Image 1 (tube, rainbow, N blue to C red):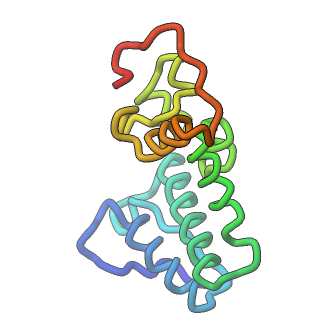
Image 2 (cartoon, rainbow, N blue to C red; image 1 turned 135 degrees about the vertical axis):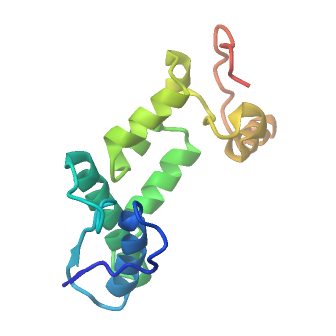
Length: 159
């Protein structure tokens, strides 16, 4: 068991991140129990949201450590989420996420219109620059994939 360790002291207010990096490292080297740190470590007592963020950071760290240790089944969730991401299956991506509510919240904040709930692109690149969307279009043009149903209209901001 260990609290942390912080890998650097230059990030007050971000200790949940610096300690999660350390936690992934010690988990990789065999620590069996990780104890989360919040962003307020050394600054004050955390509120409920800061505790939630710390726990999520440590869930990520523990998962990374399990992958690094090549534990059986450790990559299954990652592989499934990668397949869902390539398929633009947003609901499956949210279901597999370590924090489904936050993933859905951030997606819906960036792409709020109902059209985007099944869009074959994300907010980062849009349809014109999304490598997965472009690959799927090439596959369709070569007859390797079924044609996509055309939307009734292109919403503003879709490109």
